[in-house]
Image 1 (spheres, rainbow, N blue to C red):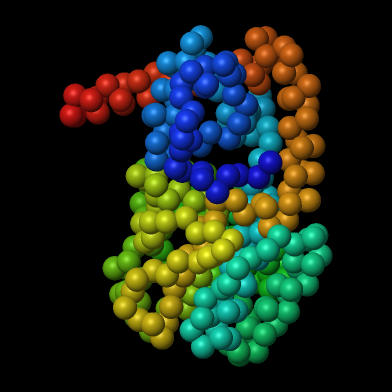
Image 2: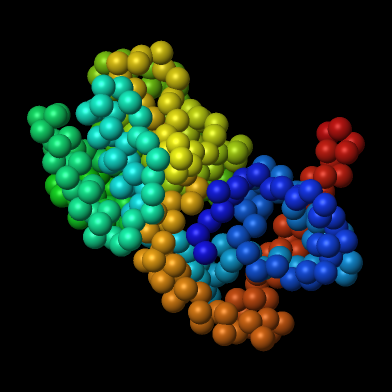
Length: 318
């Protein structure tokens, strides 16, 4: 049940119309349209205009009473993302300028960790020092997953820098990000914040930059508030990285922006997510009274009204 590769671009398949859609009064899914991703308003508008009007229960936004998400792939997204970051950097350092090739899902966590651990050892030999990594959002599920991978891969804990809201409160761009080899972004973006990095800031560091790979697990690629405005596409397992255009081929900087990272470890990710979601699923027959489902419905109606206003404003040319 990992995230779709089309997280931000919503397609209406050929031959499918609202007539077909209207038969599905309720949708339980990851719709990825509550943070103004590309096509968000149109997706919500389909529910409003269905007959009878539909309701989206977005699984991403199911919450416990304390506000914590009921179920999330975050830990395995961070874990897999950190692993891909290591694989990408190793390729850049050892292959004379090549980029990481096609990724395939691993049969289990041990197989992935064993391969990443070997890459870390090779990079440390190449660099003549320990590999350094920095994780922003280190206290959340996703960040804990990234830190766990780095630790299991043999990176010294003193070389794993763990940042969260306290460390980023001063506002970016952050010089510290340029001093590490791998930067993993694991934040949950909910509003506009200063950019963590910009192209001009990176170029200003020149040859002093160590940073070689950014893993943007958050993947807010089309979000207008994206704190990493240095790339504009989501990458895939077929092509895991995209270059940041800095005009310095001898010192490349690539971004991993795969929005379905948990599928690198399909078994572990699915088992963990299913275990977390099951108690709420058992409440589904009582969705009109069970708190988790009534709150999800209320959030949908709020977002649907926002979409309606957005589309009306767009039609007026505002």
